[in-house]
Length: 163
Image: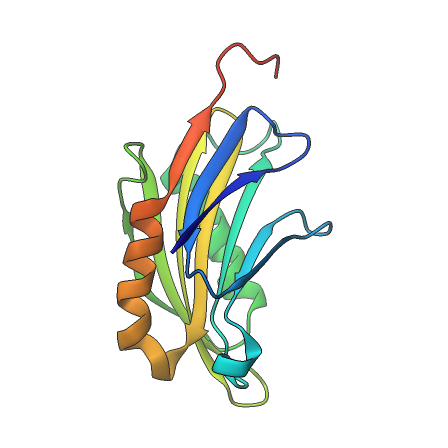
C-alpha cells in the first residue's frame, strides 16, 4: 500500500491521507475535483476496482446532522440511479470522528453489477467521502481491501484557516 495526500483546491484547510495498493494508478481529476486510484487495466480486465476521495464544501442549506445529510443523498440516489439497492447504511467512526457508512449495489444497463462502499464524515462545512467501487463478483476480495483503505484514512484539519 502507498500513502497519498489529497488536497482539493478551495478546501485547503482539510487534507485526507489514504493508502491504496502500490500498483494502482492515481490522479487528481479536475472535474469533478476528486482523487482517483484505479486498479491497472492489465490486472483488472474489464472489471477494475477504484477508490475515490472527495473533499467538498457544503452549501449553507446543507443539514448540520450527518445522518440527515446522508439521508438526502440516499434519497437522491434512489430517485436517480436505476436498479439501486441499499445493502448497509449506518453510523461509523471515521478517523475518530462521527461518520457514516453506506454500501449499495446497482446494475448498469449493460448488465454489470457493481458494489459501492462509502464512508462520509463532516468537518464544519466540509464533507469528506471515501468510496471503493468494485464488481459484485469480487465482493469477498474487496471487503478486506476496503477495510485496509478505511483504516489508513486520516483527516487533517488546519486550525485557524479563514473559511
